[in-house]
Length: 270
Length: 273
Image 1 (cartoon, rainbow over the protein chains, first blue to last red):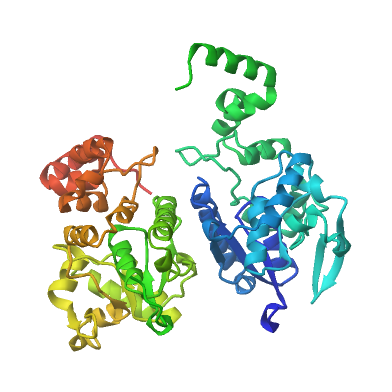
Image 2: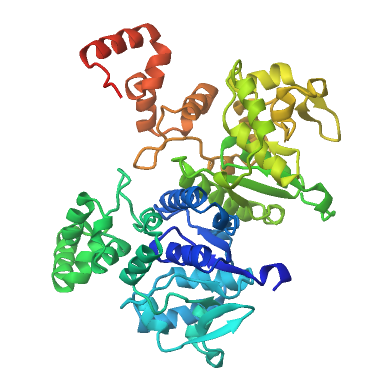
């Protein structure tokens, strides 16, 4: 690592709740320089919303914390399609997927990106939860120190495991805190107003409101933070089984299969 | 045919948006063995952001399929957030002064600030020959053709010290002597027209992802013989644009617009602050 980078924390910042919390802790509490990293996936409908959220948070930082704002470096952008294939990582990810079927696909390309661009120890906003991402690594994490940065990583003696191939380049500083814990801290430290500007939905409606149906929207409700969603999104959340084929399939696999077979009987495939 | 000469000292900094003009220039450069460093400024308030980035990805993958050697000359795009560009009083003042008499787009202000901050200018910008707006003033009055091995246009040295020079000295205008239909003819002749089909032009795509038919770039595209690129829905919207866009209605029927506005103001008085 170049000398000038040694005191800079690299953070995968998406404008979402977890990574923004980590960003604000680093800047406002730990007074550390941060290099944000963002990957542009043009097929993700929320790209513009995430970018807008980050822009708004930067603006509020400049207004409310001008000194700490200077610690935030210009975001480094990478294009998803520029990330090169890596068979070792993809195979390891596919094996993990067999054990954790809901593991997020972003973990696979993030691991490839970190390897291709030699980004080591990048911090990820993975929070304590019951999600597959957390469960996949929860028993493998160990704290250590490197160049003044506290690392919360998969232990080095697990280098040959699939988990290390996929998650080994990253540090997970939010490993022991839940979303509501973050809210409590943000309120105590006085930056909860900045947290209100974070974005979470992957499939915003044409009105620009959260869909209430996608995985992150469901997570918001489960984490008892539905106050962050407008009423239309909350109504959609309650009807999510009828609004999303995936959600319906997950909740009623038997009925889904029966309906699919019935449909196939009447509508022959071309 | 791509030769294997060293292209490092011929690298071109190009402002690339995935649109027709800048993509045409990009293709001309890489197919002529020039290394290109594209730059894209992210404006999250631009509704076409996702469409433009998608278009650039499709164009890249088409180039690597059709011209694998040339695709190696196209470097990864450098993305910069609009709000991260440093303020520059001189550039902003120049823009505001010109704006008083000439309709110059705001993008030239932030692109000039970006070029100054980066220090690596002049940058190539894909502006076509136009009969209105900035393009008209540039091509009719402000630029001068400088002859090197390929000939390029820059702001005329005689404007040194003026606002026009302070704003536009950062750019090279390599295709300002071409119209969209000229580029189409060249692309057909040089057989890269199939890649041009992946470019994006609309600033305000409708919710199903189709061009709106109402915004300025859509209208320019139609007027310049590119209507064949518009889906039916966008063409219908184009013909009904006066009903769909207040700006278009105001421009076409200014008298009627002001008459209706007065009636509205009479019926619904403005709230006092």
